[in-house]
Amino acid sequence: MRLVVTGAGGMLGQEVVGISTGVHEILAFDHASLDIGDAAAVSATLDASGAECIINCAAYTAVDNCESNTETAYRINSDGPANLAAVAHRLGARLVHVSTDYVFDGTKPTPYVETDKTNPQSVYGASKLSGEHAVLELGHAGIVARTAWVFGQHGANMVKTVLRIKDTVPTLSFVDDQRGSPTSAADLATMLIALADSKHSGLFHVTNAGNVSWFEFVQQILALTGDDPARVLPIKTSDLSPPRPAPRPANSVLDNAALRACGLAPLRSYEAALADVITQLTI
Ligand SMILES: NC(=O)c1ccc[n+]([C@@H]2O[C@H](COP(=O)([O-])OP(=O)(O)OC[C@H]3O[C@@H](n4cnc5c(N)ncnc54)[C@H](OP(=O)(O)O)[C@@H]3O)[C@@H](O)[C@H]2O)c1
Image (tube, rainbow, N blue to C red; front, side, top):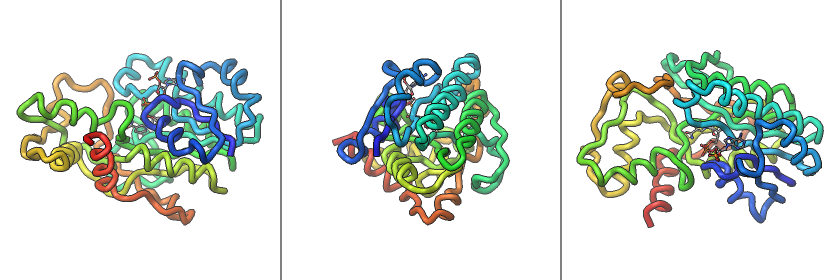
């Protein structure tokens, strides 16, 4: 498959490029080589690419900064996928786009399925939801994979943050009232390629199995590194000082119902993926 990867320098983008290299014919574009918010640049760069599939890993992911940079958030998270959808339409290519659990308000007491009503509470969530719509308008050529709490060996993420700070402070405080499904960037990348290669289209929730609060997740990270998990203290979101500009959903757990309905094997447990990533980061 001739595959274009945008946002190739990010946490997920590097994994998609890594697992596709030598398997697919890859054209990888990081932010410096292609700004997905620039419609003319997207057209000039990709119209002659011969891409059979575009996987978009580019996004404005600074959730709190999105609150004060609404225009930039929409330019990258909404106009960006729309620009890529226009190219995919011209090329007859498939477009695999990544979205977020933040499209939900987090008030549902059980895991969210793909058909649940969205109600983003942040500019980031709203801009990402708008991007989803542009991709889904492609019909059978459009795939949106909503994911959550992504971690991995590349880029900035909770696991790397905890490994960096854990020995610099006696205790660590993390919220115990936000629950989600931590998801390995490498596992997610594998599923994005599987979806690209499949006949399926539409909206999918793609996370590792299981769910946890941030407090419990950080305890597990410390346990896996041989540290004392009792050094992690639970706090409430309302205790965060200063409060974060963007509200987070209390329940971020995504039921991967559409994957199951298509007969695609869901991803393994987040605990198994976490153990692998910690091994990679600590050897
Ligand atoms: N990380 C999570 O926990 C999480 C959770 C749910 C969903 N997601 C989604 O997962 C996808 C991958 O995110 P990630 O975790 O890999 O984030 P990431 O590490 O921040 O990667 C995003 C990449 O997009 C690039 N980018 C930003 N603006 C761009 C533009 N205008 N044109 C082209 N590239 C641009 C960034 O480059 P610069 O850094 O140089 O700007 C960065 O390399 C995103 O769609 C994100 O919304 C992530």
